[in-house]
Length: 251
Image 1 (spheres, rainbow, N blue to C red):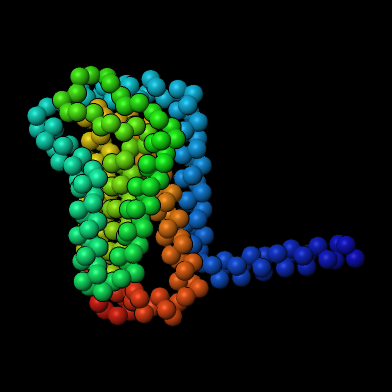
Image 2 (image 1 turned 90 degrees about the vertical axis):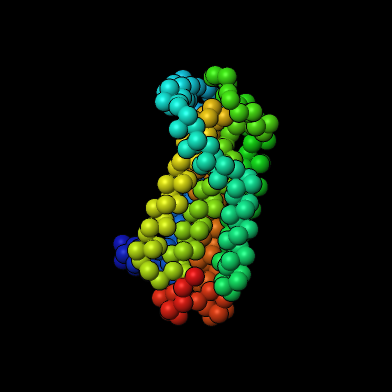
């Protein structure tokens, strides 16, 4: 009796699992799995930071980047650090929000506010939790920020804004070439904002990595939540945000 029921039990388990995957969707499963992975990596990073295991790597990499300093790179990285700062991201978010409202993409506008607002809140909480001092490896030409160092707010906010904009663009734009082109520009901007903070000596490399990991966790959680919401309210979500592939509309 026992040997006969085991295969049936396994069959029942896989049937339930496949039905669950079919109902939830692979897209959502991958998103939630990715969010958990980034959370785990962030926890591992913070554990190593508390043990001072990255101190030598942080200092050496920061000094190596600073060794390339020149007036041209100063202008280049100051430009990107301005974009990724609170005023820059606030202006970009406000302009994008108004534009989405004007185009009647109300759902995308809400997602944008949740992405940026949630990223800011997470960063403020983490800074106060870890209270890591700013690096002071050389005499800086700019006034060091008064906030704590880990994780980088510039890295966090630029990642949240530009990745959610990539997600919105791929939902609303019809041209594949334009989608990819804008995505490449935005990914490049995210990387340059993070590198600018290291170049200017106001963040350690691990601060930037921590900002990317925490922001990535939040964005994947938000996007997965969006997928679950649409699964549960599909007819209503179609009225709110019709995909470009179905309606032919573009931003």
